[in-house]
Length: 335
Image (cartoon, rainbow, N blue to C red; front, side, top):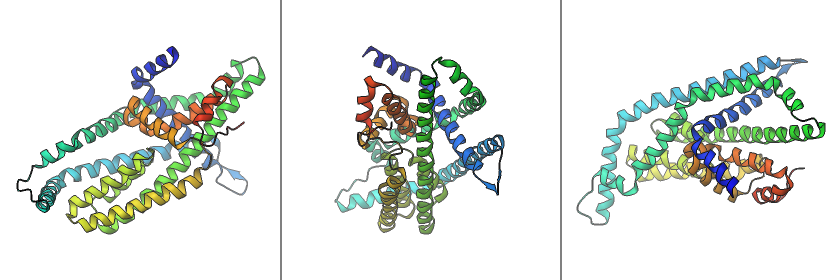
C-alpha cells in the first residue's frame, strides 16, 4: 500500500519530467521501427547501412512533425477569421430550435455554451495540447540521448548481472516490450492514417471548411482509446452544422464519419491488432481514466503503451503474475 502511494506520488509530482520522457521513449521506439523498415528496403543484395536508416527515420519524424505544426498553424488562423460567421449561424440555429418549443426569449450564445461548460472542456484540451507542444524541445533532447545511448545499452546490460541467465531473461523481456509497443504503434498509426484519409475525403467532398485540419485532428484523436473516436466524429460534424446551418448536411456527415469510425475501429483494427497487446477492453478504459487523471491529455495518448508495458513487467514475476492475467484480454500470457 505504501509502495503504491509512493509510486502514485512520483507520477503526479514528477509529471513535468516523466511526461516528456515517456513521449520520448515512444518516439524513440517509433524511430527504431521506421529505421528497421528502411533497412528492409533494398535492391538485390544491397541494403542501406543501419546508421543511414536511423538518419532517414529521424528525418521522416521531423518532416511529419513539421507537417503537423504547419497544418495546425495555418488552419487556426483561418478558424479565427471565420469565427463570426459560425457564431451568427449558431445564434440562428439556437433561435430556430427554441422556436419549435415555443420559447420566446432566445438566450445568448454565451448562456448556451455556459450550460454545457464547453469553454472549460476546450480550455482543458487546449492547455493540455499546449503543454505537449511546449515540452517539444525537452522531448527532442531525450530522444537524442536515447539514440546515443542505444549503441552501448547492450554492453551495459551484459555488465549489469553476473548471471548470464538473468541477463538473457531481462534482454528477452525488453525485446518483448519493444516488439509489442512497436507493433501497436505501427498498426495504430496506419489505422489512424486510413481513418483520417477516408474522413478527409468525406469532408472535402461535402465542402466542409478546414478539411485537412480536421483530418489531422482525427488522426491524432484516434490514438486516444474509445473517446478519441467520439471527439473525432463530433468536432467536424459540429463545425459542419455551424458552417452550413443545415440539419440534413450535418446528419449526412455525422452518419458517414460514424460509419468509417465504426467499421475501422470494430472490424479492421481488431483484425490487425490481434493479440499484439493482449489487454482487456475494460482495462483500457480504466487505464484511460487513470492516466488521463494523472497526466491529462498526454496520459490519454500514452495510456495504452504504458499499461501494456506494465502488464509485461508484471507477467515476469510470480507474485505479480495474477495481476498480469487480470489485465490480459484472454487470461493467457506469452511465455
